[in-house]
Structures are given as structure tokens and as C-alpha cells.
Length: 249
Image (tube, rainbow, N blue to C red):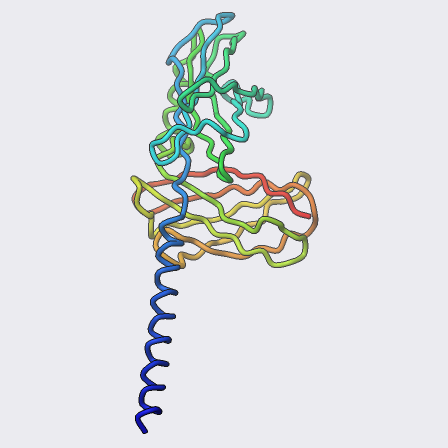
């Protein structure tokens, strides 16, 4: 009888230990989740045609500079002419700074968007610069767009988690992690706009599975490169977006 009681007691201890180990692993996994990258563009408010302008983006993660970004490019276009934009690859200098020297050829309002890919994350902040004489109507239009949240200024960290290998015609789990002021962002409306060149976009509504964690599934119809734009909104007027390239086999 005593042996039976002892065996039951030991089994209870083993099960309790397993439960504790599982909780510890969950806690460690949460602690190991990487902080989102942040990118801040630095450029003057105004410039003159045919004069070189220094444009810099400072990339950081958890307040530490990112010195090993996979790719940093600046996309530059004149107001109303996004289809004629030019992309220029930036060079890393120090303290997470990536820089180009760019010469604007004409008067006008220009938009400068940095495409930063680092540590399996992507962010696309945008700023504007006035070159020479700029019509007031253009400035007002740009200000209205900024108020509506059409520019991403890095206020919200947006991270897409996906499988390392994605196969066409198979259901793919996708997760979006949102963070604002170093805390998970809850109660947001998150949609994925998934586009392949030459085809219409598909939309995926994500559901909040945990605080700041939004999940959904999508079946990519064919192999190739897709642009996944993450749209984030909430009732407080937030409207952010970022774009990530996804390769499907």
C-alpha cells in the first residue's frame, strides 16, 4: 500500500515539474521575441535645385543602432508622380546611419521614403522636402495626407512572422506583431494586402489572438515574389502601413 501511495506521489511531482517546464519555456519564448526595428529619416525641410542634399536614415532596434541592415534604399518622387520614383541605395556610415547624397533637378515638393530591411523586418518611413519654389496647394495637400496617417513615421513597430519556406497552393500561417511605445498594441484592425505583379490584390483580415499579436492564413496561388502590405488602424485615428516582399516557391 505504501509503495502505491509513493508511486502516485512521485508521478504527481513529475507532472507538476513538466507543467512548470512548459510555463518556463513559454516565458522564455516571450522574452526572446525581438524588438521591432525603427527608422528615422533626417533631411532638411528645404533645398535648392541642382544642389546636393544629404539624406540619412537612422536604424535602431531596442534603442541600439542597427549596423547590419540587409538593405537600405531611398525612394524619391515628386508630388503626384509616384510612378516615376527613383530608388537609390544608401551606404552605411556609423551608429546605425545610412546615407545618400541626392541632387534634385527641379522646383517642387518631393517625398523621400526609406525602405529598410533588417533582421527579418521591414519598415518604410516617409518624409517630405521642398525644393525651390513650391505651390501652396501642393504643401496643403501633403499636410492633409500626413494628418490622415498616410505616412509611416515609425510610431508603431510592425513585424510580420512567416514560415522560412512558403509553398504555393498550401495554407500559410501569418502573424503580425504590433508594438507602440515598447508595449503591445491591442484592439487594432489589421489587414494584409497581398499583391503579385500583374494580378489583383487579395485581402486577409487578421484576428487578435493575443495582446498585440494578430494571426491569419493565406494560400498563395503560385510561386513568385509577392508584396505584402500590412495596414494597421484603430479607433484613436491610427493609420499605419508597411510593405514586405515575400518569396513563394
